[in-house]
Image (cartoon, rainbow, N blue to C red):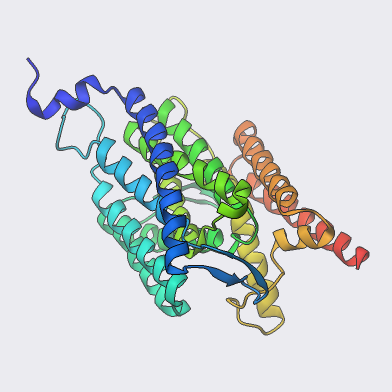
Length: 368
């Protein structure tokens, strides 16, 4: 006879919970977005200038609110936190993950509504990362031989994870400049990691991944096809999805620290880098260019790769589609050529990305 504590998870098998998480997240955000648009209209919560100060159509920038609400409700409802059934997988790190996600959400929301200094945002992001890395123990603990480094000491693991996490979070924030780009890249990332967690029987992280996937789908529809019902991610959404993707990257690398799984990756760091390559390359590239011109690395400009493509003559959707294709190509390459090892894969992918951006910049200058 089943006890009350395990009745719920006995009948909701992992695959069923994953399906429910995906569909419920879609349904919740489909409900939330029209409500958000109504409130934004009533309270005049609109962005009338883009990041470069240009006047644009008045569009709400709090699309991350629906993603946050859907993700949190689904995660708390369907993920086993170890206290309900000892016979299934569980995610004891969920409370720190939710705590970090909530911190990121509030600093992003405040920035969208009132503006926040880069220092304050950085401080909150680092605190959120400290929570998941130290309290939640979700971090990069091995480089699998990348640049001759293997298992990391605790202090090195913590510092590297916080540093990498900070870059990923802000990479998604920086690349959120044209319709559908940041959200589509996060959608691909959550799907890739979600399927890996499924085949690895890491069910609770699979639910976490598909909760994000489902939350993103309605937003992408409204962001790309909304017309008069359009909305943007804002810092609320871009920081949020960057943080969740960071958690998934860390967990993916943790699972591949040791050869314990059937679907073990011999070059997990390089593969996870391929998943976030486009936004990470873009933020490093613009930081270097801005500092080279003696400008603040946080100054807004049109040096981003997606703006280069738009300036060439591509539409927002065409630029998003091209960068999404590039990202998928790198993911496929890292998957099928995983045996090349971390260092070789990293050299090849970074070189290819540099070549792509140089070619795009050359076309832009030629056309101008």
